[in-house]
Length: 237
Image (cartoon, rainbow, N blue to C red; front, side, top):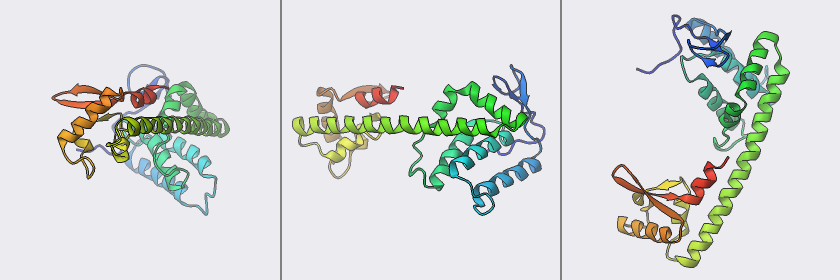
């Protein structure tokens, strides 16, 4: 059964070192009661969608709405993750992003103490300025990091493409693109109009292994291939 809005009997509190019933000092108690929570979610929805009444910069609205969602804390679990996903979807809706590529969670987890402190300062002292600046900084730093990471991946792809074109010219660009979709790829994922059989896919991956591009790994009963340079690049913070 899918869990929805937390029921009235659920005693959810926000504690200094996280949420739950164990450990830490209680710093915030979110509203209780399904009707109250639904009313506040409706208010949040209208704030996000009514452009005439709330005609603010989208990033300001993002910061304010993120606080609102976390303060409502509508679910028993996963409110933080859900709130960050909603922020990214809001940026897509406002055409600030084309795809959900901005990973705000990394910044927020790294600056977690400030995150909870500033959330609480809005609740207790209405200190919106510090909270909004925090969120704008999170978006700025994450955007710069993401652009740099994309540039690194693009350079790696072009270097890999040049190597394969010189050493393995029978392997098409479309196949090389597939080994950059994810760090791991199975032979069957390479099969398409250019790679028509599993044996051909295995052969190509084996040839790329000889060039040091791919490394075979056994996962369960299946052999998959790791794009080692892509993996290392994505693992680097």
